[in-house]
Length: 237
Length: 234
Ligand SMILES: Nc1ncnc2c1ncn2[C@@H]1O[C@H](COP(=O)(O)OP(=O)(O)OP(=O)(O)O)[C@@H](O)[C@H]1O
Ligand SMILES: [Mg+2]
Image (cartoon, rainbow over all chains, first blue to last red):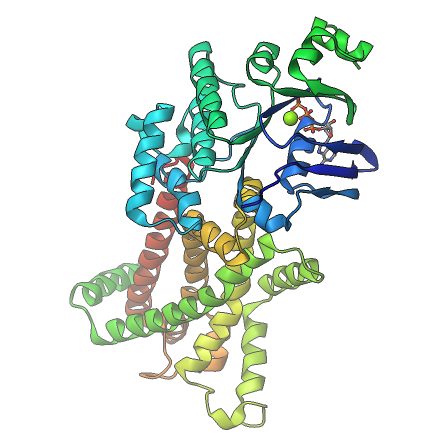
């Protein structure tokens, strides 16, 4: 277990095809709670999350979790913006991370049942995952991330394809896991959701952290004119 | 016309009575090509998967070589294997020339690039799909390969079947290195060539039917596999 889960970004830059898509970023993340990353399309939110998770190739700088990368990632789970479904049944998708972690079969089966019920997929356990609906895939991806009991959970637009009721259910689930000590770092385009879940907010614009701080402060008094415009629903470029 | 008709009738009889020569030749064909298939698959399936997921220095070169080998005319493969195995060649002491083993070697060389190339193609697609998830889950190289092979098993089977189809219908190379010796290295394709030359259309056609039958079975299997793959059935 890594005690201090506060990531530190040191002069991080991600360049692709000669274009800077993230950075330079110097930032110290909070050690607990729920951090929500907001910003317009293409701002670099996904890139920032992947960078924190250690799956993005950096052009410069480093991310410091205070422990070796492999060990840190072992305690993290990541739900990608477009859910990645293994070409297997829903059940096998849920078992997969447990099998990798060497969880005994009986325990794995019990956890699968428990999580399938929590996420509303109990009736679909034997269906092929690639044929689920967009929203069901997203729920499955979330359950597959949570089933390993991660210390840190990355979510990239976890509710993008969900209806109002499912969104509420997922939000409640996220509040639950957060209450048990799971650190959540997520992106969302739903500012209402950001208000409901966030303890602090990072506002990304053109690959840079434009504003950040406690959620209360951010929503009440955004520090930059761009952030204010973004909260207003105006176009920010 | 008459020749063909009486040939067909005789061929039919050879088939229903399970003619000894016909059965023997068919079994040898299967034995040679299936052995070649197993050996080639053991080499090509992991190789193709490896090429799909690992970025190393000479990856492009290896792929280019593989594609070039795929286009190698079987007769030339036969010639090279012949030279290597012939008494004055480097492996002459093994005395393998004109044995089924020589034929298996030639067929392995012919189908390994084909199977590896098809595997590489399919695995690259699957890897692009799984990449982020498998990296995120901290998988080892070996776990990645295992996952890809397991979930891509249909594509791999298709690759193998394509290899088998090529092996069983191949004539140029095994003619040269096998020598088409009766009761020793005669297989379906070489026997057909010989019997046709001799004018014995009955046996040639009978063997031809068996060969067509095998090819159809293989193609049908590939078709079924790719359909279940598309429809996402398990
Ligand atoms: N491999 C790449 N090559 C080139 N450009 C890239 C690459 N990956 C991302 N980008 C670009 O980097 C920018 C940031 O991408 P990113 O996915 O982080 O945005 P985002 O904030 O998550 O957007 P969205 O809200 O649409 O999900 C985009 O303009 C994207 O086109
Ligand atoms: Mg994104």
